[in-house]
Picture: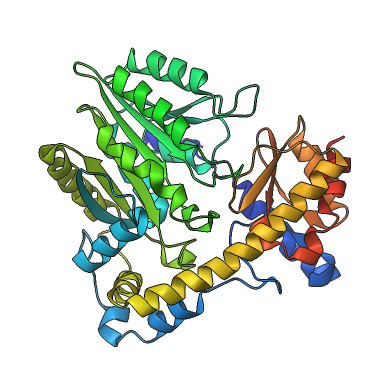
Length: 409
């Protein structure tokens, strides 16, 4: 039978390794019991009882909203109080000396989608690292762009600035606009964070290549930033965005999913940074139109929750304290896995902090299937296994690295 779809929509099949793995976890749990299943698949923070974390203060503010804020529409761009709070939460003490504006989006994913749509042309390549969150590719292909990658790590397991520069030069020679997405700090799936010195190199490359009629738009996808060891230190690179050249536009993808544990509310923001007021105004106008045509408007309740928290310094301090407590548990799990991995001789990609640790292997599917025989569930990626330490309690982390090491041999 011939397709009834438009040509650009034909042949699409959505395969999500993460949610396929989650479904397998559910079947195993039903058969063997939760205590006998290790679920290292989903990128959500769970407590030591394997229950999804909802920060108590965030939950209290959310549940005590009035009926208008629960059921009412929000503005398309987002409430000013929400946008102001999103900007403050993003930069803290490291705000660039530039024009900064925000537009509410459907989570961090919506921010990435809108950024790609408004800063690249049909058919353009969008650039990111070879180790990346897999939906980046679908976000590009669904709007008739394509994702291309550079080698994330060099032979010393540091950010590969040579590969980055080579790919930027190659792509900007072919197209007038180049969108670049860097997922840092606490990269998904490796947990790596670019250093300030590496950011200096990145900015030097984009500034040197955005000349004449060439425009580069560079985004930091900061979904996991609030689980860094030092939430202030990990933001110092942001100040460097005020050194971007006139033809370079900077952006940040803010999300309430991880830092405020409101995953299902799908609340985020696309934050633009530029020394050029006209560029910022243009960014806002284009982004608002994209929001109106993609989702109209977003969760009023989630916006109001963040605005209420930021109105009260005591509430904000409580949220920060609660988050730091869970961040410490997350770090304990990661430290244990890393220590045991070294003992077991298990190779893993450089990890700074965050929800995931990645194990490179030539046959991720085979290794994943071996682990499943012991009711250990991880996510097979193109070149490795993603271990979601965010979801695994300490007692189940113990001994995991040795089992993974056996599976990849």
